[in-house]
Length: 314
Image (cartoon, rainbow, N blue to C red; front, side, top):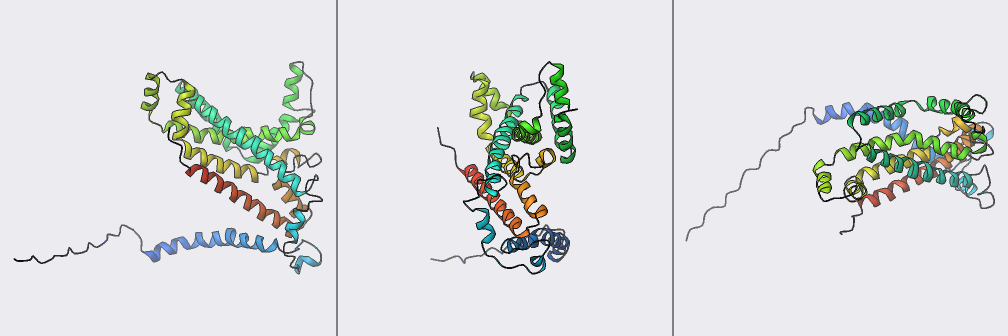
């Protein structure tokens, strides 16, 4: 009985498709890395450090701040003043309501509904709608803010002029309903992004899916629920993460109401601006910034967990 010698195949040499060497690639990435370090990473840790001090802009603690530990955080969550107007707790609750009303219900739901509806209109109407939506989206925040301020002005505003023409009473909406004004404003501003995102997601679904559903006699709601929504689940999670963070951190309502009247529209971002750059309490303002970062991180983790959760099999 003879045994054949075991032959080993020569190892293939891995082919390197890179156009540049590792050193050359690192050299190209170095400027970007330095910029990110200087403008993102270093300020990130600096804000955390300042949040544990009583640093201010003027006075003794401007140059030689004292380490106060968790003093700034305990002051923000003081039960005696937490729910009072002008305090952190009131702004946090107000911001939560603002995110729920304008981002989750307003932007996401309205954007999803508009994206689904334009799937059924003729192509030329769809193109015109997309053009107007993109035009509204690319306008700068400052321009949008002042345009809405002119629209809602009590004496010379366009809205009151329209109401007068219709025989309806005028109103000072920025003074009477300031919270709902910024909710409508932020919904109008952000629904365009959600609509464009969901529109591209619906367009990526093969038309044969909906054609098969039409043959089976499915209604529009059944096609939306059983085909559209499950196939764009990843896009929904992405949209919720982005618009929640953008809305939570937005500062544009400040251009309309300046945080007033009587702190009724002072969101957390506006509260942070007042504490840090009007009251010059840098330590306390840094603590607010750290809390905002942690809340944003919690939102992102919850959405990602929901997005990875498998749908139950029917």
